[in-house]
Amino acid sequence: MSDSTQRRIQAVIEPVLVADGYDLEDLKVSKAGRRTLVRVLVDRDGGANLDAIAAVSRNLSSALDEAEAADGAFAASSYTLEVSSPGVDRPLELPRHWRRNIGRLVEVAIGDETVSGRIQAADDAGVELLIADQTRTIAYGDLGAGRIQLEFSRSAGNEEKKEG
Image (cartoon, rainbow, N blue to C red):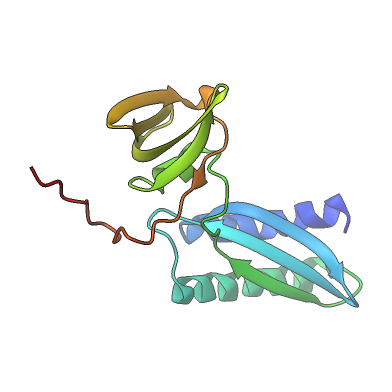
């Protein structure tokens, strides 16, 4: 799909997402047989459940339909819109990715070392990680992309209690 088509679609959907309180994490426009496939990846603080994603999908679909009616089709064929939120396998690269995952265990490269630590805090300058019972504050420029580590024994929102 052409870059101009992707830019045109992005110009239509981004204001809708911002108005709904979402960030556009990724947009892919490709051919799928005779149809054009528009894949939109969105996220927001607090995450998004299936009902919220369905509402965003309806809003984006309406905006794309209105844009096509006003300015012509995005492609020679009809399009299919897919809207989803990022999974846990998405790399943590931007400050908002780190902030949205406070409390989670991550694996990340710091310089030449790869460590596992729990995100304690994150702001625009860097992230605070609990690594081997020590809190370290690391600037984003010193971090590689973080990867969330799945924890099956830890319940969400509950800190493990130490006996002592």
